Length: 345
Length: 212
Image 1 (tube, one colour):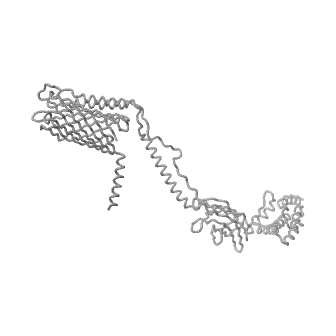
Image 2 (cartoon, helix red, strand yellow):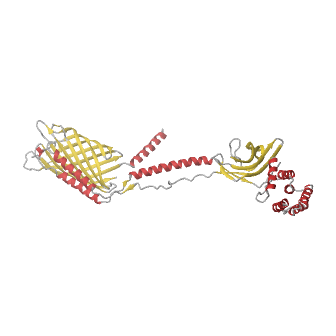
Image 3 (cartoon, one colour):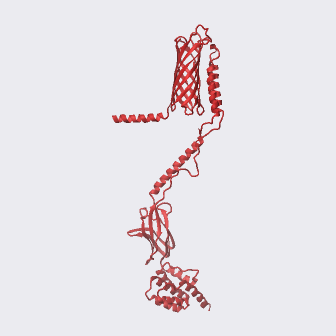
């Protein structure tokens, strides 16, 4: 009794997950309707009947998936796993939502996944980077369902570049620097990122088209000043002082004193008149200069500071020139994934 | 050949042009007052005259030439040995700035009397230095001291330590184009013949100078 109740709940949830919208084939539509009505044997019968008819790839995958659901509901685990395997091989990116689907069906699906070799959910992210600089690269992600030798390539016409080759299973994350074997950046164009997985006789390939565009790397602007630093005035006006008068007094006094000391006593006293007159002139000059606004004097510290600033600026601009020279030789690559055309076996 | 001459001429003009930007000439005229004494206190002369000067400066190098003609008369008119005479004073110096505003200087000085034996004619080589003190924009003070080496006198004799001291000021435009100048020069010459015959001269020049 409890099993029947469980199946009813299971069916109701699975029915909403399957849905019958956008199905062209009438038999498949009826099979989906039968499953919705929890008529599991009829759903299985109609689904098998639909598979014997001409179906598109998506409808085939849906029919096998419906069989997987129906067999899981009717406790035919092996048949359910086989049906899911067919569905996965047709549409490797097929995914069940564990929040909506019962664990019983999900475990059958996961069991099927582990038994087939497919490359699922191949994703190439958009990326822009400078070729050959730092850690720039194109992120590539995919999942390999069972252990296999996995070879990832970028192909465009005759050009084929190996991105990675390794033994892998589960989630694989790659970063492709988008360079040719000789180190040059990939030329602009449309490429196909192909992931080939091989384990014994089993092989599987998945692909994702991308467009690579080469562009110029932005150059750095010249600096006309150091950010956060301003030039200081290179002259300053010293405060008014009596220094000129004192200097005139000192040197005038020295001239008179020198005259008095050096004059010959045998030649009589006096003779200091000219010294006094010129010293008076010097004193007047000193007095006037003491009253006058002093002339601008070079501010030595500011001159040194400005010189350091100019040196720094010149050094920075030289660095910028070198960096720009390097950047002009670099190539900026922009990689954009294009709409998928589907995986191939 | 003509190409070589032309290149040399262009080079010379370029060098002259760059030097001209830094060189400076000054021309001055002065009124001169002198106090001249020799041998004894009774032989004292004072008088006035005119003088002219020419200066040149380029980088650390400087040179000046000055000339003055002074008519001197005895202060004591009763002195029997004193008579009027004219002294022609000539000075020339070249200098090199060695440290800051201090220059080493070498030159010649000459003083000729007319009539020749009215007073002692004198000539010597100047060896010394000068320092310039900038009092402010448009005012300078100059002090100098010279040893008068190899002193020669028209009346003979020697001097063991003749010395010359000077003080000068200039006041005017900050660019130096026009200045009022004052110059004091004191010479003390301990001349000896068979006896002591000292010579002393105090000279004041006041005038104006043009710079260009």
